[in-house]
Image 1 (cartoon, rainbow, N blue to C red):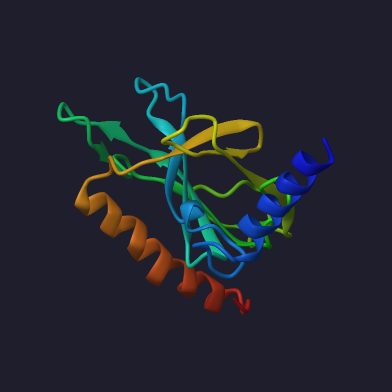
Image 2 (cartoon, rainbow, N blue to C red; image 1 turned 120 degrees about the vertical axis):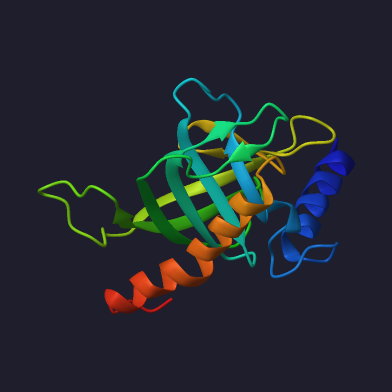
Length: 175
């Protein structure tokens, strides 16, 4: 009993401290593009979580559609909502504290302040399936995907590399 507890604690510490194949206390598995596990493709509107450089992410709400080939077109219609945030260090339960704020909405609400105040939450990385990790955010399961078309990935990268920094500069926020 004691031995299994010690082994479990040691494994958790190794996973979260970077002594394995991870860097900066973040597993590289968290980087990438994540979409909801359950998608209503008739509606086509959902959040895409794009985690990059182990410590930052954007959440983009927009309309997507799925091609006959099974690939996904990002921003298939006008309008989007963008949030930007930072990821904290991995905890022993594989949760990552996050802070994010709303930066852009195509149609702003009359009483809405942009950028919003920081919202605190967490990502929870689960390995429910031996070959796939699942990311839990706001009680919704997300799966990492490689189904976006090259043009769609380029759009996401453009949001990350050009549009978000432009918004941060406009709002005089530091990264």
